[in-house]
Length: 124
Image 1 (cartoon, rainbow, N blue to C red):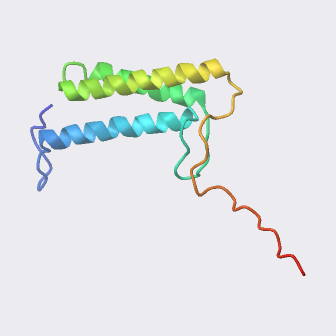
Image 2: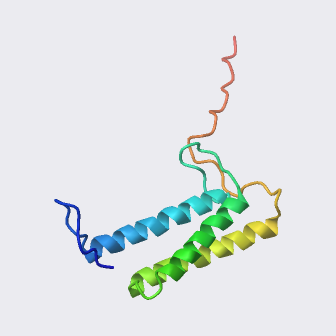
Image 3: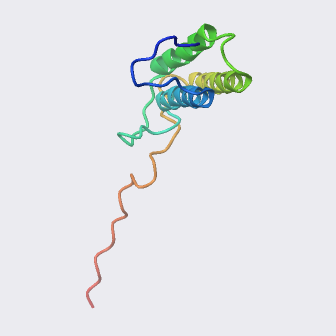
């Protein structure tokens, strides 16, 4: 896609920058979907959450994105998008097979655990 007129003072992005931003966008959506599948913890709350409906919506969004960009991606971008969609779909099926009431699979990130209680020193 070529933008004919850029706002004054802005330069068009290079192909490398466009590719990097594309990969970053797909990675962002993939990570958000994995959070909703309960596979990784939310980095803000440090809690593992599971919302299959939201995860499905994100997967469908990437599938729509694939259709709308068909014929406009280079091989590397196409492969990256396809690989991410396939991985998310496999994880979605895995979660559906676990059932709607299954607890999230991922553990909370390190450092979120409470420190072990030390026993008080014994009096002699």
